[in-house]
Length: 272
Image 1: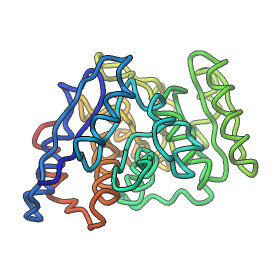
Image 2 (image 1 turned 30 degrees about the horizontal axis):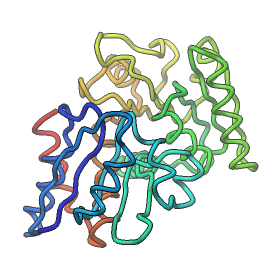
Image 3 (image 1 turned 30 degrees about the vertical axis):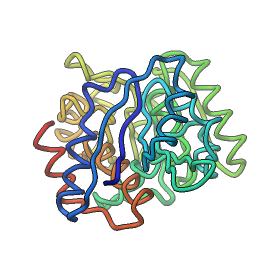
Image 4 (image 1 turned 45 degrees about the vertical axis):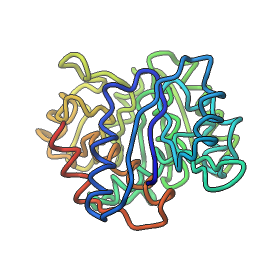
């Protein structure tokens, strides 16, 4: 039996197990997806233990995405972003990937949205925003990062420019959204705003019909931002798609097989 899983703290809320096990069922694989919740100071021992026990692959979530960077051989993208969310134990040392970035790109591709030549705005400067910002900066014409704490937006923009010198990346506070969003082709909310309360990080009057809006929040699946964007005639992409495709890419790294996307999506949507 192949064993895959998720390491984080906490992980009880995760939707990854049913999504991945739907893939195994669809393809007739003898495999199981399990969750591990080590203490924050035990992640190194946990990863070593997983390798020793013959675990085939791990997803990595909060708070360990940066901690495991030194425990694996990261690919170029994961090293550039500075975070790993997928470990493949088929090599020694194990290989580390960041499939969050691929999840962003494939979510837009799935909805027929081209990033090439686009003007993009990212709201947030945390872990999710890093993956989003690097992905968009590699594909779009310009990227603007807006965050409540301006210093964090500036720091992220500087990191992206260092790793991608050809990218045009700017930054500022949330007040800059009033100037940036009306001209944007792409808008991504990479904050948790909208998760616990019916709030949005972007005023509705900034939105327009020519922008594609991705909200990384997937609980609720329809956030206030996405409702406002739909009312403005914009293309809307809920956070479930980003969650789905990061899992799809992880599955493909581990197995070398095309993921059964529809089966994984059905399992995920039934629980959102």
